[in-house]
Length: 462
Ligand code: ARG
Image 1 (cartoon, rainbow, N blue to C red):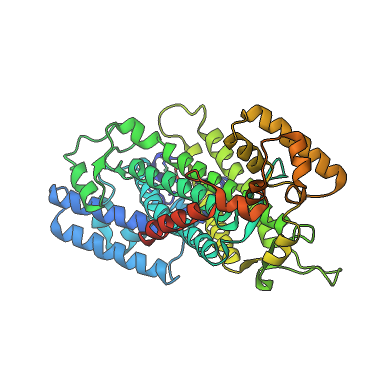
Image 2 (cartoon, rainbow, N blue to C red):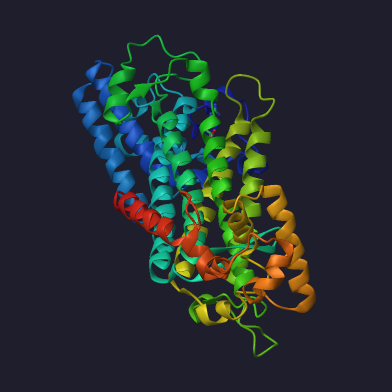
């Protein structure tokens, strides 16, 4: 007599090969869905009892049994036996063992296909909430630093060459903007996730009088899916989640890259707290930004998760195929990596200071005020293209003679353009440039105040 341990065993003439057991199992990965699986099962059972497909007593037994199983898992007393394949079957088997006959009715009108789709959506609903919180935590750290040291003037770079002066606060809040879009992507995804697939069964729904809307309501879903085939084969939301995470990781890696440079001897713009740096096993003087490097490096992991997930989905015939079981590895890994990176990034930002003295020392290098001078000429009525050329000439003269634009004598300015007056000096030097930015969204003093006020309001809600 073959053993009937698995729910589908009776169909098979032989017991499953050991190698196959190991290969097919997903408990080692999907055990973390247990809370959602149990919540889904309790709601399903309640609906079944309201629809008279279960008696009230049976529902009570099921609910009690599942609650006890959840407690046992919480407390680490539950044995996850991989021969039951996945979290759905291991819990069902434990329930049947605990309460007998009533447990065998739980799976009425349900398949693991709609069950797993439900569990993933429930998990993701929570995960989006956490993700948004971690991103907001990093934004808050950036805003706090922008409040504390935002008035420091930094050289802004394009092509990694000095471009125009920007306030440190403005620079920091650029990251807050990127992160805001990252948050929005998650929040926007939440609407597509928050739809209940339960009742779609294996592929075609059910002939039993299930009340899908009731189950959805019990689980706090505002809507149910329209098409059973799509419900159980759709993993778009998983790919979207990993994409949103990968985009966030990309933003973190850009911040990391900047700060690795800025913390170097060559830049010296920032100092990262010692508790967030590492030393070298050989060179005693080293203080390394390894944590930022890891944040930058982990971005590759997220891209890998995304490509793995999209490739796994590609070419699958409708509807469910076991390929999809591989989605969880990518999702959980993406979520865990982002939790670690976002929390680490926030802590680093909280323990970083700008080095105003050091930044100021070289601030007048690199002609950060050249564009401002061209704009001064525009205000004197010179067409911008011509003004651009004139300043280009002046810059190359300065470079040759090794002085800055604000050190250039008036006669030398006048040789290039007789419209230049001594008021030109009111427009030169990084500090004057930053004070003169006039356009909304510029890198200047007034605009920073506006942005800080915006972020204070915005982040209060998170
Ligand atoms: N562990 C499976 C998964 O994650 C659950 C669904 C299994 N369905 C099936 N028909 N074998 O996708």
